[in-house]
Length: 535
Image 1 (spheres, helix red, strand yellow):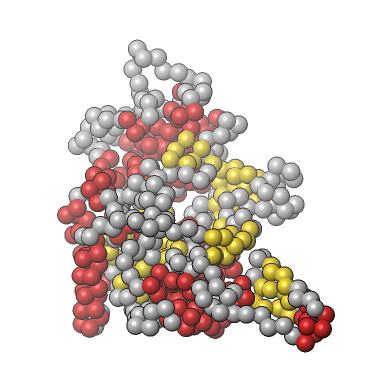
Image 2: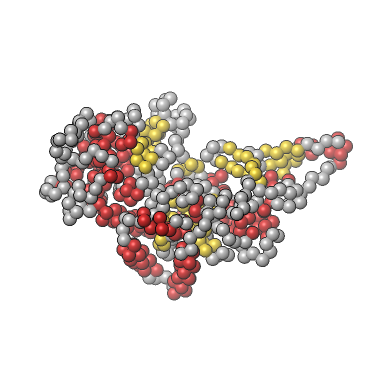
């Protein structure tokens, strides 16, 4: 039986195929030779070897799903009830294609079909890969002059750079931007942003923070709370029950049209319906589906930013996360924006808040690609030790070449503007940040007004000075009855003919560090008090 994932994997150039197939075979062989060892059945998605040598290779991750691996929060896991025979079948198909390509090269070991019950004895010579965790493999397994995993890893990284740099041009399609604008309640967001600007400006009249900064925050909030949906397991299309991930399905021509090379299969245990979840990689399709994980979120949000005429960059991190950066004309710098988290200007979120071991982070716009790794780390020395996929000189040379080609036809004024911005970025990069308690490494300095825009102090609603004045009806009845709904975010003045007052801040005389939190994923809404730490 043929495999769609193996067929896609086979389309890669020979060096990429050989590198990826070696790792895939080792994953499979470890499980087949050690069926009772759980350590071989879990792959950390953020591992550099996996994210740089498998994820960028077409069909590689799809092969793991066809073997039976399931995607969990931070790992790919081979479940205990998964079919070993299916894993072996995909493994043997990969081995057959690898052997076909390497038949004439005696320096590359042949990978024969492996019995699911076979256990290699130490005294026996191995004709396939050794059954030990591949992260501990040494480079002496294969002749260096024939096969260089480090070189292939570098090629994969550079190929991904070029791919993303080309893909961001999609956001410049005016037709696509108009389609995005049709989904965004622009006037409503502008109205809310203007109200918050007027209220906050009283605290810092001399600030240069402008309406665009507040509008960006409102766009982030709307995208997270009202527009896009996070997906872990899809609901069954037949009975509406939560499904379980069950490998992958071959993509249809329609899926591939919208960039979905991988289609997740989610099985309903109640009615046994198979539910398809294509991982679309085209922003136009995502305007329709409005759901996904961080890749879909950042892809669609970056388009929305461009549609709103923000200068925006798509940001790719090799530790398996993506987000957006938006240029603030008032602050003259790029702001980190993560639509999944609804956070702005908190670049140390991943290293300090999430504990990610960062290495390479790149920002892609219509004009240039920039290595922005240093913005997102306060541990530059540690970060440098993990940047081993390729030499820094080669990386700079490649980025400079890509930028030179892209900027060739730009007006001189635009080139000068980009240069001046980059100089400002370099100054920021060489000055590592110190995370502030409670901030997850957001901006340390800055005006009171900007802290307000980021929701750090709750000052935009402090001292609002609102008071309820009793009506004649309430005075006569000697009754004042007011209710608040956190879910609807409005007051109901029951004693005054159920008058509705929208937004909880509108009914506040004075408050400090109180916020309304909306979690669409958990379907929960609440008001909470945030305690800020000093020092």
